[in-house]
Length: 66
Image (tube, rainbow, N blue to C red; front, side):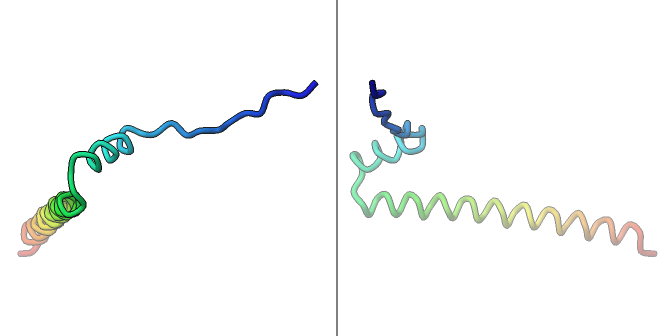
């Protein structure tokens, strides 16, 4: 007697589900524009964090230097 074959189907993640809905509601150009905008937001946040870290390092340096 043989066991029934098992199918391994990946359950889509929440992100995959959102992307599927997005693809139904938006045209390709709108999707690209939204993703580019989000990438810009993330890059701005990274630069702001780097700026704050540099400012703190300078403040520490000037507090130690006579």
